[in-house]
Length: 176
Length: 176
Image (tube, rainbow over all chains, first blue to last red; front, side, top):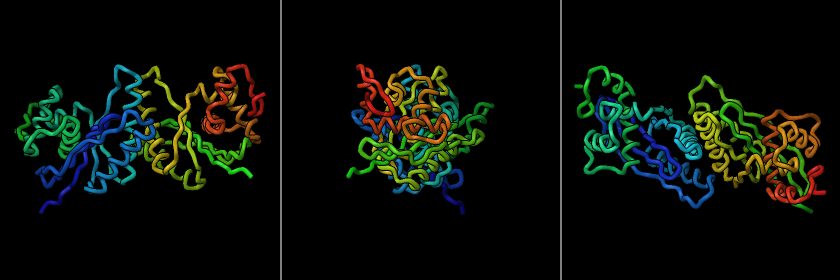
């Protein structure tokens, strides 16, 4: 008998934050849920961050994940956008740590390596592999797919990526 | 009889977040408390944000402010610093909105105008005026002084600054 670990992946953004939850039992991954939290651009920043916080807290309350993984964000060409993204990510992490979840961080490179097998994968390839690995009936929205990919990266211990670059290949989420 | 409004001012930062609380009764301002929350640079970002969150939550629980004011931050020459500061500010706002506090935002310019009377005031002038306006026995630490200045700016309705630039002068917190 294997225990099941429920993982919440987050793709942070001020306008749209994607979330995705998977169950890991041994090496098996199962889709639980995914979606997006959208903030209203007409609201003040504190209100928008509250929407984000409340949304993540609701997802946690409804699905009781054991661990969380969040995508590391990078500096944007536009410093103002970097600042806004940073604030959204700070609020998202706040929601996770307030719920007592351990929070792991992965770069987009690590996530792509873990899910697609190489770090230069296009967004569509990530979405496609997420759909295959979790046997979804259809492709999730872009933000939900990125969040699920982050959860999958964490389920693989964030290690598959570095192994994949050492001559291994990933097929259906397994090293071949 | 005037009602008293308790205002929590926050000067956000990842390494050090300053806080300052004042009571406003009519036009009278009274110092309540101030201090700093420091995160451990050796901790992971999620843990550092948790330190910040927990610290602000404790201050709120202990002193029960009615309203909050937080300094707007600006993009740094170093984009990575901008990102870190953004995340700290996002977590700080999260702590405020979670406590149900209305959150007002003021730029450094607005704060300096409200406290010193012009936007080009040096940090030492701000600290000096905060000490005088609140009749403190000694100057607070730089981060606490900035947080108290932010609270004072909010107490003045964020309006004093713009009036001060229209030919008024600020003396002991009053227009003269």
